[in-house]
Image (cartoon, rainbow, N blue to C red; front, side, top):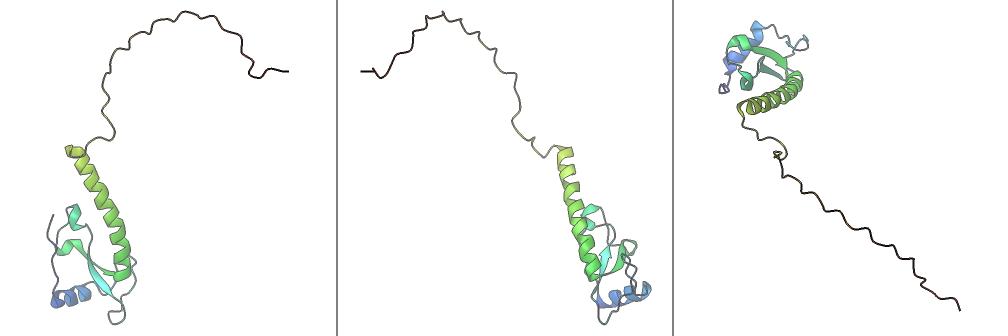
Length: 123
């Protein structure tokens, strides 16, 4: 995974001007005096993203939060798939074995049924 890069104030100012203050997610104008904004990775670093300027976009902080939430879900799913693919995840449940050959039960002799006893005698 590529290490996260901190952006200088100069870079942020130039990046904002280069993108004309337009959010790449909602296409709304960003008022840099009143609204919080971020520089966001289009392709997340955890999913083969880079710190190149071609992978960076300008976004509202609220839009960035929503996208990051979906990115976290996708990153976790990708990690689970990778772990399963390389065999790092143990299979769920017990491994079924062939088992033993069941012995046949001997047949029982039929017993004579006794009539039911009366528990209380009538006087």
